[in-house]
Length: 52
Image 1 (cartoon, rainbow, N blue to C red):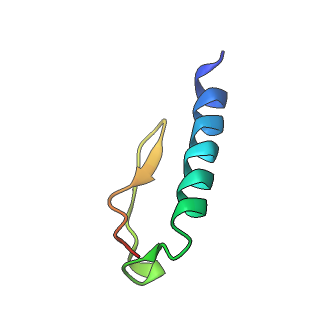
Image 2 (cartoon, one colour):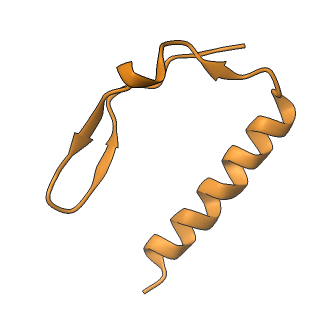
């Protein structure tokens, strides 16, 4: 299967590029206030406020 490995590579490229272009990017809230959503087959962020 190609889906998950391809998504990981795309995510790595996207975040690397974003952080190179915006080196002052930071969390807009305290780290402990970041919310996660968990399901049987996946997990993800509820929101991710950023500041720059």
